[in-house]
Length: 241
Length: 333
Image 1 (cartoon, rainbow over the protein chains, first blue to last red):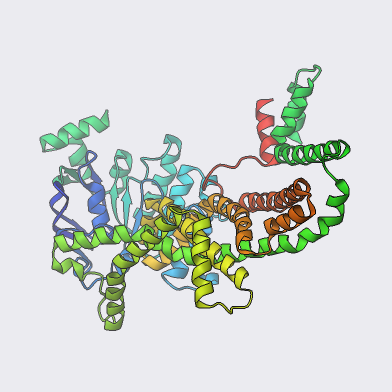
Image 2 (cartoon, each protein chain N blue to C red):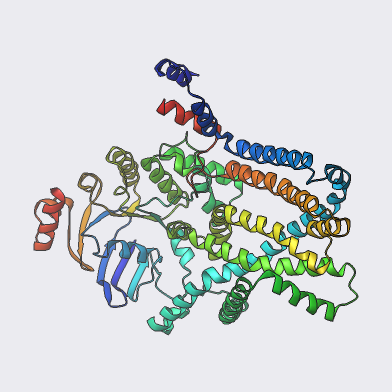
């Protein structure tokens, strides 16, 4: 489904990604862990072309999205993205947040878009918050609206960039529940997260990234309980506390 | 009701000092009413005091008040027209000022990254005319940015008085037989001036819209122009309502300078009344009250609109409604 081959990205002298390879199968849920600054977010943003890699190729299905012929807007429709800081459009209600992409990008008429958006918000358990503005929602609710917004575009895969790390502890589970439900429905997901519980329950593979490279990958149990690499060991022991 | 009852129970029973009544009135957002009432009260009091002392001739004010309506209307029309024209012209300037540097930077980076990247925005089968238009737009960007910046700096760096005379001599040289010549010169001068200020206000507004909002819009697959129309513009405009109101107020007061080129606005009328009839104090006081009487409700209206159109959590907090004050009182008392 998603293939990342030898991707490099640098900002000036800062070499953020140093030849990353990654392969995610259809329906697979992959979790990515790693210290801050290791390039996880950059890699995620490369996959939906919010950042264009300097070198290397990324495939979605059979399409080489790093090719100059591909419009980034097309890629972003295929791959939904959920941000750490939610990034809901602050001037729009929850319903309108979800509808905007449908009416403007998918060119649905507003009645159809409203129906679809309502359905997607109900799917994340927010059927009663359609008219609330982002500032009137809790962090967990905002993040669920953001998930609904991404889902509404019917993406082939979803990228999650630390979706729970900006949340108060009491709201984390409601977002993780929605994500687990998505995983069970067979959505292809790449999740940057340090939520070990989610990784163990939902992920089939965990990747450890450090200093712009993928250091180790394996099943959640392998990575969390029997890490092979010293850097993985050090990091895992840190997040386990 | 529930909270009010509860708070009534909690309040210790004691005599409320008078300053508490004043301060609670302020809390309940009667602040503006107090200010306006105080100002008008002072004015009326002073007028009568000065009138009885023989400094002011109240009869003069009474008989000549009617002559102010025409000039006031002229000032208002000049302000509204030049403000709206200015807004229409300032929006593209603000866009160029806000986005050109980022596009320059991106182009430079793309060049550095290699020629293959430069073409990546072309879609398969995209018509060449569209591509050509994109190239033309890019080629025009640098001169447009330079011109916009130069224009804004020139306007902001010179007094309106000077600008007005330049416009005056230019237009009266080129089209000396224009009907309503002075009015049109005044309108052009005001518009050209306010464009410079409004463009900078709008640029700041567009740039205050967070990168996260832009990223989110990109992530659902929106194109640049759609992002601008549906995210940047609605959010940016809400953020600049207050500075634009300031610009609007300033503009209305700037119309007074147009009396130097014989536009028959309020200030012109004050000179007419004050000079030949030897009642300058009355005349200027009348005009001052007129300016105030027009501007004060105007800014109240803007504040009202701002509060009504405000999106929770966007822009400056404006928790000054009666309901909010009551809610706060319910918490603290």
